[in-house]
Length: 236
Image (cartoon, rainbow, N blue to C red; front, side, top):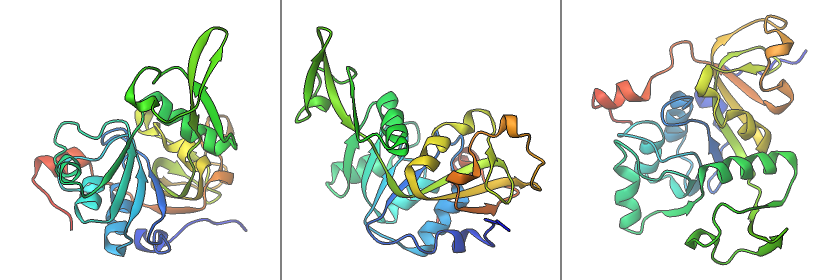
């Protein structure tokens, strides 16, 4: 009988290795798997390449992972947002790498990686420094830039509900990058707020089918990044 439940966040991330590429869901705090990220901090894997929409806020979650010296490179769209000081300071000091990717291009690179598409063309970065060193082509009289699909060793994502097979649904915008990250990673690790029995999720509303999910851990009362930041919480 298929049962993808894992007893704890620590166990769920225990095999993330030094140098791994890790996709982390979230659009700001919406959909950010705080407990899985903190478990990864406790685990201690280093020199990670992290793919996320941004670089976190305050001194918790992704920002804490970066501050703890575990991330060697960020691939993201918004390296500096409100309450983000950790990454900008480290980047200016030359202590972390950045690959800046327009948000729509980032989403499509992840989707392409999950769909087995090695590369695609987009007009988004034409004429900007982000197109430097990349292949250019003309289609129907318009210039396009080649972008490569993104894949990862692991994805850490957050869902609203999951069953033992790994079928997932999300809470509104907390869905964001999670479905395509689950597809693009060799191992998708999910923290879910609610675990339900098989059959309790209407198949017509499943967003991420269980075939793309490897591990599920229940976090019934997940932390909210903004509340932690406002309270001045730091991790670890």
